[in-house]
Length: 245
Image (cartoon, rainbow, N blue to C red):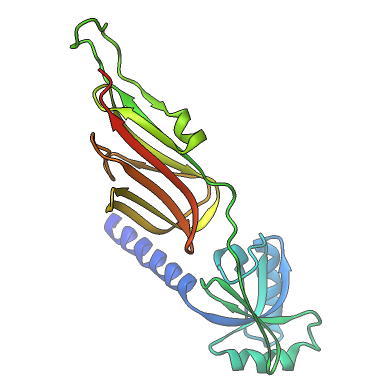
C-alpha cells in the first residue's frame, strides 16, 4: 500500500512538472488574489459553456510574475487559435487579452488577429553576495602552538574585496555561499585555465551553498570564481594560497 501511494505521488509530480514545462496559449479574463476566487470564476465560465481554467502566474516565466491567479478561457494549442479567440471574446470580456504560457523568458501578448506583441523579459537580479568559508586546523602539532579547536569561519576579506590568500598549512576550504535573488546563473571555478567545477542555469531565491564535496581548493594554485547571467559577469573573485608557518 505504501509503495502504491509513493508511486501515485511520483506520477502526480511528473504530471505537474510536464504541465508547467508545456507551452500553450490562454485568453486572460481576470486576475484574482486567491485560489478560491479563481476556482469560482473559472467554474462560472464553465457553466456558461466556455472551456476555462486558472493558473498561478509566478509558476510561468513568460508571465508577469505578479502573485495572482489568472482566470482564463482556453487553453489553445497555437497562437493563431488564441488570436481568433481574442477577437471573438474581447467585447464580452473587456480588458481581456491572449498570452503565451511557458517557461520562456519572453512575454507574448495577443490583442487580436495579427495584433501580437513580443517582449524579451530582462532578468535583473538583486545584488549577488558571495561568501567563502574556511576551516581552521589544530596547529598544536607544530612547536610553539597551543591546542585549538578547529572552527569554520567566513572570510570577510573575500566578501568585501573579492580576493583572499589562504594559509594552506593552517586552514582549508569549507564552502562557498551565494545569496541574493537571480535566475539563470552560471557558476564557474577555475584552477588557472582549467575548469574544476561549473553549474549552469540555476536560480537562487535566498541562498545556495557549494561545499568541498563539490570542489576543493588546494595549495599552490590560483583559483578564479565567476558568476555570470546570460553572458553578463556578476561576480569575479580570486583565491590564492601560501605557506604561513
